[in-house]
Image (cartoon, rainbow, N blue to C red; front, side, top):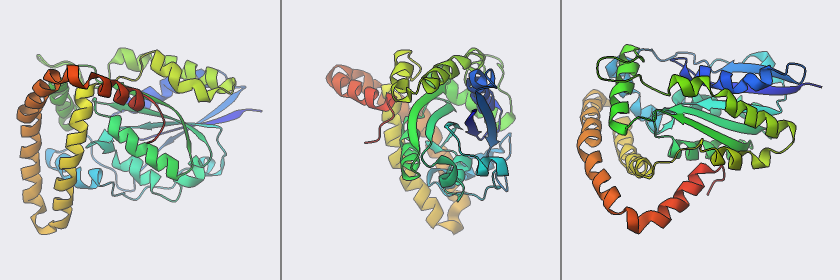
Length: 304
């Protein structure tokens, strides 16, 4: 009897769709053993792409505070099938799983689809995914899903270059190299080679050994943790909590506050972040043990 595999995701640019489909390919190659079903989450009112600059920043408070939008119902086949494994693709908006992903998780459909089912989370991000994954872990636990693995594909260029390329991509639609700036996002080589992760997942799944899936992914160095970025995420979450609540509460001042937030964000990236990096480097010998413990936890699938 065929096993049912759900590939669940949301995509604007097509990058995440390419990633999850490549990871699912080893299951597709064995059609006599697996039935693979794809579910691309659809919002009733979707966000534009490329993003107008004002819309991109105006989405911040709802993104960070995880305020859902209405989604279209999943196809009947998705709602009525009991899945044996779910490959769950997501992206990060403002240090949080994107609004479409949160909207699905907070819908009435998520529990029925996810409950009691092994889940492998798959993210395609700029580079800050670690604490978003922690937030997603909470949702999956509350929905009684079984998180068995996590794969995080990132833009491996330096933090400041990737800021410029992601803004170019999001606001103009241009991912490709331009001038001195490289291509944005996860590299094509990594996207095209993502099937190797699917081979690992399929092997563990068919051998009923999903409990040892994540350690093998970690051994192959597929889960990159940059201690400096973890620190930035922690600080960013604290500041974003203040900004997002302020903007939501002061509705009449929202346009002005969004403009101030944009200025703050650019200053944080280009002025504050380099200073924090210097202290991060200077404190490295003292905090080495703590950071190694943190790295081991974030590479895993358990929830504190």
